[in-house]
Length: 366
Image (cartoon, rainbow, N blue to C red; front, side):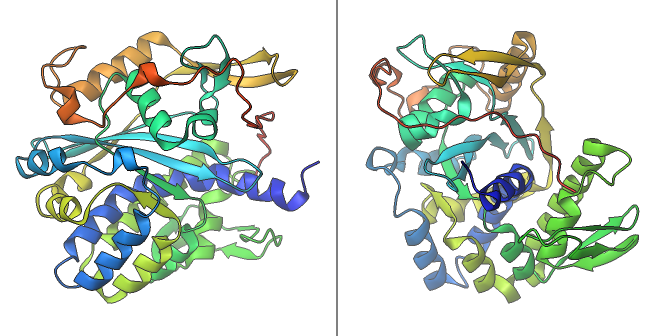
């Protein structure tokens, strides 16, 4: 039986993951901008965040030339929940960046999306991929699922937001009404938000973004506040004052981030793609919730199934943003993305993975 502390942590992760990933690309741009001035710190940081990159994903030399030629590229952002016995990719966001039109497109694949595993008739939720196949297998599956090549990846644990907000000196929000909410340690009414414009620290930013029950607009109101937190944090990260807190920003994400982007690539992105980071569009895949029986777990589980028409529209939009002309791709996709060996997925019929896929906990946060 799961502890109350674990349940609280799981609830907290559900809304943290919606915030953190929209900021990750901005962080990459900031890191690159500071390479010249903070060269030694950046070198150490990049060594830390790339230390666990799988060997097959380390050689991205072909990407260097493509970035210098200002080609569009893609990133798979994975939010990892490792609070239990298994590590799951509870957030999967595909980002495409095009410097020719100065824009970024973000598509979130819901964690409960129903999928069929490769070389198998076994159904799972998509957040099982990381547990079963790791980083490389997750990338391969998403490439096939979204019909685009993935150029880079980044993974992030759900522990850095408070430190990141504090590292930039706080953010400004405009609260539509006053309310109280628990803090990150689940102390009830520990955070008090006043109506109006105010500067908040990391704990208050977390509380501001997480509350739902007291909002007359429910989850819609919470999503609006989350977007406000994202934008305010992005503004601070892109401001000149960022450099005064550069070391603190690195420390806030150092232990929670992993990527295969090299220092040279980040430098190139910072010098040539920064304008795109100021024009971020979020795309939503339409779908419907359902309940499906999973024989493996002996449970009826909540799942989300995308509408095929909506998914195809998103695929087309991402391919156009990456300047791929058709469903087969006019470019050599081995040069555009990471090498994909989808046929090499192991069979899961006799898999001994211990992925735990409990019922979706849609418990409300204050």
